[in-house]
Length: 299
Image 1 (cartoon, rainbow, N blue to C red):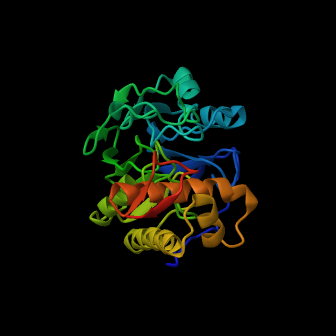
Image 2 (tube, one colour):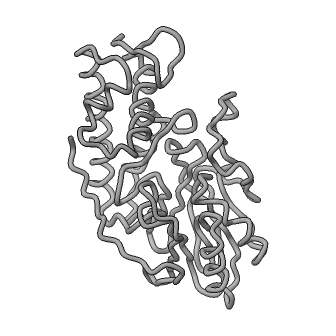
């Protein structure tokens, strides 16, 4: 497998806004987990009149600390990368407290429900951006501006924000420095995710700031490693099928030796996303619908 240069050396003090870079601060929510690492990092860009990126989960201590820390400032914009429950829900109490409108690609499932696809119920179903943004749109504030970079794959409504003055791309969960990204159908789409990674390779952003953990300071080699890792997983699946391992549960057992039992479910979802992509590309087929418990074969 390709070696991805992850950096898990990240420390934070919960409930405290910390300086990350000039005119950039972060406060981390207390929702540490195997999927959020140390928790959701809410970013504040600017001074005086500021933008908040990914207000975070509905945790009273996080919301109270965020609002208290911004008492002497004016929140003029809330930028939401996507609508998983650890990213967007706190935007509502923050709006109630500050009046700051939200910006995002759309509600949960935007990009999929237009195709008649029902996505999982686990997202933030209540989020509807005050202002919908699309790829290439520019959001301007007091001394700062953002280019919107649409990056579906992790979710269908995932969007990154390029802070143009600082040459920093806020990547949400599309690229994370501590782990690979969960891609879980039907809202997650491996084909779209890979295309979104290729899209970032064509850009020249100097640094990424993911929502979880620390920055990615050398983006292009990191993204290339992520792509290589996914291609390796794809090859493993095809090798499994060649050997006659034709169901996802057994593939995961062979591919993820020594996996934490708590992560077996997500691993199966990840392999399923690859299988769906391979089927859509005509390399794999099954009798009946594409499903987690289906049996697959080479086409």
